[in-house]
Amino acid sequence: MPFSEIVGSLAESPTLKVTQRVNELKAMGVKVLSFGAGEPDFDTPEYIKNAAIEALNNGKTRYTTASGISELKDAIIKKLERDNGLRGYTRKNILISAGAKHALWNAVFTLLNPDDEAIIFSPYWVSYTEQIKTAEAKSVIVPCHAEHNFEPQMEDVEAAVTAKTRMILLNTPNNPTGAVYTKKFIKELAKFCRERSIWVISDEIYEKLIYDNKHHYSIAKYLPEKTILVNGVSKAYAMTGWRIGYVAGPEWIIKKMAMLQGQITSCPNSIAQYASLAAIQGDGSDIETMRLAFSQRRDYMVERLNAMPGIHCRKPNGAFYVFPEVTEAFEKLGMRNADEFVEFLLEKSSVAGVSGTAFGAEGFLRLSYATSMDIIEEGLDKIGALLK
Ligand code: PMP
Ligand code: GLU
Image 1 (cartoon, rainbow, N blue to C red):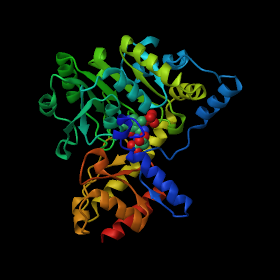
Image 2: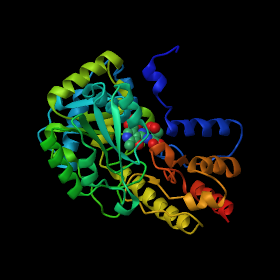
Image 3: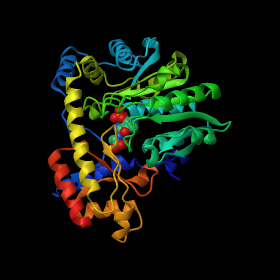
Image 4: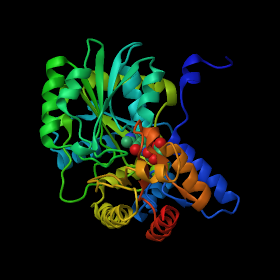
């Protein structure tokens, strides 16, 4: 093999692959209706861009401390207190990274030894399994089911834990299902992990995108000594390209993760850190405008999808994805699985989605509604026409 076994074992990110495919088709002049990779269609708010311009003009163009600038750490500490009721974090508990994805990898790689087990709930976000592979550890998949609104069940967690279980990866609000986990489950899981001395990596990147008066509960509140809370600015502030994410956790583990980051990438981008500072210190009105738009789009999508033959779609409470069951629809069309259905949609109607298979859930389709209402209407018209 011309490259390492670990890299050879990794799969390409299916969500990023869709973006690449869509861009290639667009470059060929095809009008693609993309419901693919999840990123807000909104532009980064003006006040955030201005903060970046100011940082540039003020010469904030050098390496920062490996773990990130103190001002941003302070703003994150205040945010965690204000939004999540989490007290007691100091600068030593915060590490700023190049996106939540990088933050997750730092955490996974710092905690896992070869052959350790990490529990992941399926449907799961595509990068968890691959990140775990880089540490030569093993993903143990615990399925969640539609009849439980895709919330994990404690008995399934208990059955999956072994002497090798080192961590559980939690993602609420969830990508791809949009599930928002209840306080009851979060508290029970915290109690269980404390008793068993299991780490929780809590991916809270969709925290700001919650509908129907549901609430986000961070497990860090109930298990601070064993939680690595992961969040970032990509989704809430329409800043996917800026690449800033962060973690909050116990000081000694943050120190190790910062050391790893210092060796791998020196520090996160200095200008983007100042932009993120403005974002997190903002009054939240832009987030609210985007959240309301997402909520309307979600309602529209769920209603229209459920009116189509063979499609069953739950109304998700969070994130910006719908995750309908499409088995009946593709079987009627003579197809064997959701992958074939996704190909068919792209070929016949230039509609791009992601097959549930990518998230470990056969028979489902993920459609992101972080796209304009015009695209949503046209895309759904086309899917509807194909299924008639
Ligand atoms: N976690 C989840 C569940 C995601 O969907 C994403 C998507 N980008 C990330 C983490 C990574 O976000 P970031 O852009 O901050 O790397
Ligand atoms: N997280 C988004 C998604 O699931 C963006 C792509 C990625 O980061 O993998 O589509």
